[in-house]
Amino acid sequence: MDPRASLTGLLVGFLVGLTGMGAGSLMAPLLIVFLHYKAKFAIGSDLAYAAVMKLFGAWQHRRHGNVDTGLSWRLALGSVPASLLGVWWSHSLEARLGSGAEHVLLRILGATLILVSALLVVRMLPGVEQRLQRPDRPRPPRGLAWKVGVGAVIGFLVGLTSVGGGTLFGVAMLVIFGLGARKMVGTDIYHAAILSSAAALGHVAAGNVNYPLVGSLLLGAVPGILLGGRLSLRMPETFLRPTLATVLLLSGLKMI
Image (tube, rainbow, N blue to C red):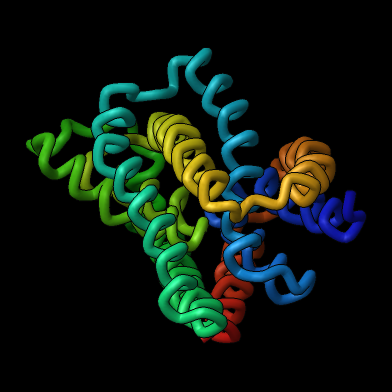
């Protein structure tokens, strides 16, 4: 067990419980920048840790009826195979570029973090926040091809970098598929559990998962999420979300 990783898990878990969407994207950059894990092990271990956490979250939301299972599984038709393609591509980079693959992965991860930070800012805009408070709207006529396509694009990024799935899919569910706040959160986590599990298995097969690291992260993350969830009612989102977006932006710029 790595006590530094447990403290990292505690910090990220606390921020996830406190802010929800976006905070999970901090795990991989923290493992790379501060704990000095190689990008491929940070990404693979992050996905394995996230899969365990999101399976519990998905079960809770499913129990409370907050999940559009049909939309989740249709998105997964695109996201699961695309995430495995992302895992394969990152693995093949190492075979082709050797040590240069680390540099490429860090740049892609940095660009994804910048995208996530931008979407967090968009989500805080008054018009978007008002839409989040509404119940589910009548859905635009988006067919199966739309759902599979959106799932594939974001799933590839998640398999490649481990970050952005919650934020990117959350925005898609709000803007493209018309879900209200409660259904959006539940469906996002349910689908993320499917996607993270598949991508994590791909990284397991590629040898990119550090199991003691995953255990250490979970040891800190579980109490962190519980503590953050309790404090979330007392902390102003007007401070938390901009701070999180800034940290993600700076992390992304550092990696690029």
